[in-house]
Image 1 (spheres, rainbow, N blue to C red):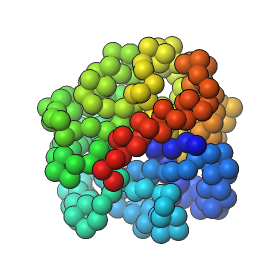
Image 2 (tube, helix red, strand yellow):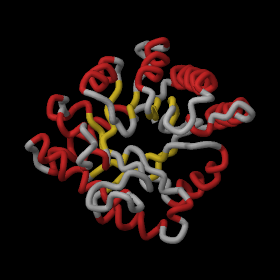
Image 3 (cartoon, rainbow, N blue to C red):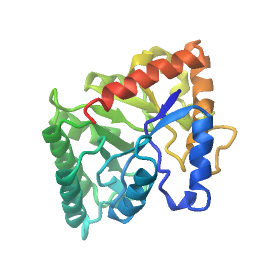
Length: 256
């Protein structure tokens, strides 16, 4: 049985077949779904999915770095704070720094990231980090806020072996999904050097579908394709991958 530690099943890309996609995932062995936030425009959709499947769907709350805009990010952060003061969430996420699409809001992204890390530490919750074209900048913020209370997941890990070890040393697991199946994904070349106890499974659905679905809509039912690749990398059985990665996920989200 698998835990998908990161998917956006509430996305509008699932509006036509969300319940069918959830059922396909269950049939594929996915028993728990962790849903990261993006911004306030998706909150109602997240809550609706949780209301339908309260035992399987675990919500996070946070402001995604690509939603950090100079004009609105303070208002968006205020909404995040209101929500986390009202109820529990599985994590603060996804948060971090993204310099792939837009480099003009780095300062605001750094501020939003650090602010939300502070809230997570106050709550004792993990954080789920989004980092794209920004490992140095991301590590700078994380290391500036390093403490025993800071832990979580580097979601959709695409860094180097050195980045992986740095993240692990800071108390983080690595979220591994469809990228591990890509020919140019690179992480498959060194992942065997990382102990499985540091790995959690994810899809990031509807994004980053694994081979042979690359370029199409991803969904949580594709977790076994990620596991199949990990079995090759670690010379392990699907059951071993499922057991260890699920234990790792529960370790991260234990406070929820």
